[in-house]
Picture 1 (cartoon, rainbow, N blue to C red):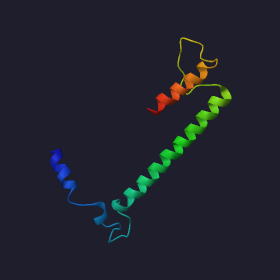
Picture 2: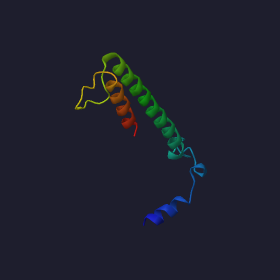
Picture 3: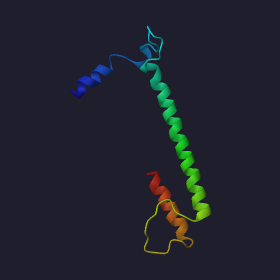
Length: 94
């Protein structure tokens, strides 16, 4: 079943399909897909930039960490504070 569906995708390419409806003149899905893709990428990048800036300001000004967790040691003193923040940033990327 899945192989048949995959074979059907070879019967056309997005570039061969019309970008406007012949009767109404409205954009078809062929034209909307690239626009949505560009918008999605830009939205994700904007959200990531805002989150990075907000997290950095919070870490520097309020001496907080990214995640509220319990540690069996006093993480508020240097160098533990820096190591905890580095480990949380590294793990949040993965």
